[in-house]
Image 1 (cartoon, rainbow over the protein chains, first blue to last red):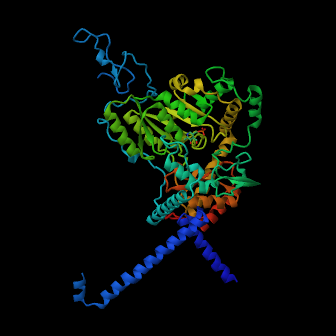
Image 2: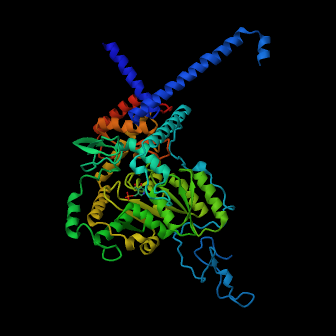
Image 3: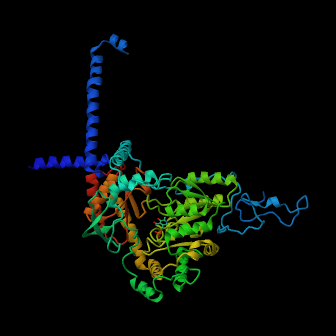
Length: 73
Length: 535
Ligand SMILES: Cc1ncc(COP(=O)(O)O)c(C=O)c1O
């Protein structure tokens, strides 16, 4: 039980800090939800962009020889 | 042209005929206006400064010889700055969406086609969508005297801060919000004040210049002058009005005011009413001030150049580097208007304000202005200086002639408090205030929060940067029974919201310890320890 409580405390502490850092602390609930969703979408898009474009690009670079790199560049 | 820059004397010899045998009418031009050659002197310098005719000949100030400490201003990290701006951006964006989707009734103007909009769009937008959300931290009603403790009347809201209703409960809090520096608000001196009210009534129903002067007023003016160590003083029923009505009496369209950027609204308004030209120098920056002053002197068109500063700045907790300003003023022949609203009574070994603190003779400051609202626990303001200056102000400052005289019990309260200051009890209060200030500032520094200002200033602003943090801190502190004030945008820059603690001689060490504990809890929970200095 102690352990669960500690985790709860930890989460609520950092949730408040997150709200304060983004000024969401003082806005209405629906506005909070909208901004959470916007942040969520942005994060997912970034993650997907990094995953699909950057990662595969780097993978390609790593698997290619120096000669290929010259051609790519 | 033969007029001096000081503009006070037209030096043309009127008896000499010019080469055509006429008195040259063209020479009677002053500031672009033709005059009859006679000009009344309105030069109120106290005689110890000569007006420098050319700024170029006077050597530059060597600032290393003076204490020019502008107050501590710790810079925040790039991350904090970025997050603060990002948060503001989100707030504005949400406000915009809100206004678009649910336009409130107050935001729609009907039947006003062809007229200019009633409200400035940004200000109303700001007050609806930023200020409203944190409104529960402001304008909080109290139901007791603002002593070391006060009673807050609790409110709650059913419609997201558009309106409030009272819950019927009250909360006793330690008061860290009032400017009650010496603890005179709330107690003491009551017997004498009651006697004055019985003898003279509460109002005189007349301005000073008519039937509004009682022996109490004369006594108060003499005591104030003696207290400050100058020739004479004039008292006015309202501190704000002392500035807004006094400045137009002293300055006119031909004068230049060099005004600190953090000056109080009353000074700014007074300068505007005086129609003086205003140039603003960076807060407490004597080098910038010197630059502006030299440039202005080189223009050779100002009847006088006046530096307008405050003693303690209430939003920054900084103290003016007065010794340096006086040295500059003497070298360049400027005049100095000093507003001691927050410093008189609260600073200096004898409580004489910032002159006492900086070791400057009061006669070196041309115009000493101050209010009785803070340290003396009363109301009203004064202007003190040379007898010539005060006589001039009685004539041309509108307060003496047109505004209601100071209420007699208020005058008595000031008198009693001022006399107490020179007794053991007053000295004890001054010591207590200084101890409390140093203790509290020290504790805050150990917590790692960013405090602004001078170590001796009893106003202690703590930077929290965002509105949310300001509101959250005020909420947390109220929960721990500490009443304090958060300050945000119109009074500070948008991204520099702060909590302002005001210390008082009436706080006991136990009370302050409780406050420190409460602040420490809030700092830990909200992450306010932005400071990167050694703790
Ligand atoms: C620097 C300064 N001047 C003038 C005033 C106005 O004084 P009062 O509140 O007595 O009208 C204040 C008040 O806060 C102030 O801070």
